[in-house]
Picture: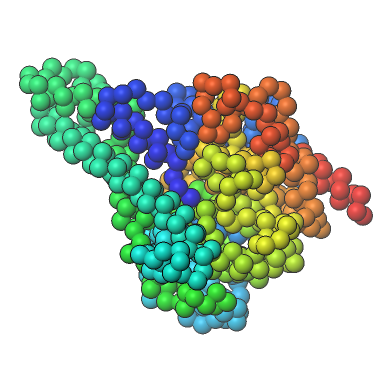
Length: 548
């Protein structure tokens, strides 16, 4: 999934370039509920009644419902970018395949994967290399169809449907590529100006690190230094750091050099027969990968250690995280997603968290097969709804619970939108996808503080953060009521969600200053609620007693 905060950063940078006022909230992908306030600490685990914060009541559940109860450990598979399994707050929380002998280069458990101690990396190569960057699915389709149809007319081709699809894909690809080329051109101008201004001020002040206090006490003697002070001062006043500016430089470079470059293809690293969708045994056991920030953050939301008095506290204490790396910096590939789901099911996961998504799925059939396989084996799939502020009842977002070519849907699937910690016009993540039919429930997804690599911590926002909150709730229910099926746990989470019926909330993507941007919360998902572990556990207890 695309990083939302980079788009917000772009808005501020563009203001610095053109001198125009910027309302970052107007950008559909801006991921912060309120840039002038700070989210309450541990807010997603707090309680709407006792704490007056619209979290999921984790702390209340442990205190009031679970004292003295013994849970059964639940394995949650996280299909993502990789996880820092050595993180201080994930120690003891990572799944270990006890049937494998570490480092002996033998498939001890005969599951087809050699030395899969903590999971598997489906975008790694047999020599230990990794796919870090990859193209978007849009880019891959553009290249495939371009090679077939470029320069031809509709009268010259046999497959009229694919030719028409190519025209659509070509238009979309070229528009997106042009957008980022324009952003890149503008940003590079600023980047050069900012770098020069910073260097000038460093020399004038005799300091490597410059803060607002330094600028306020500085009287520039030349017009050049006056301009430099203005450029750097504006960045500091908007909390833009050198690291953020460098990160955005890398972000734009990634889009243009890799994600939207039809001539880039890293798949040779993996070494599989990519056209063979039934091929399963490829990759390597190195589950962290080169960029594990996203996956590590997701894992911490689910399972950060609640007993070690450091860092953060995940939703679910009695869990182990199975690490499945299948999501690069770019779009995941259907074949890898399907194989990751199958691996999780075959190796004991009861919940699979999927915080990723894309607009095209050319091999959706193979993913559907894996989803049905998970359903047959009683495994719950939790998927992030996406960060494009769009109604996915009518617009594509994959993977999806709707099966290809039928009206059927997966009954073991939860689609999750992102709520915020404010109220009214700040109640829903402005970036979150929504859909009365397609999105099942919302969960906290704005400013969640969790684990990131190197035993660090950071706040991130996205439906990618909301999905693991729900995965944690599901795992908690299964841990204390292991006899309940995946379908029953899904039903419990949906029925126990807290309905917020008073007033209206912001519709993602809407103009914050317009009445048309407000809507009833119930119109954004099928439940019209925010998931809640306290009420889910109460309902699970009643259902369990009834089934005895």
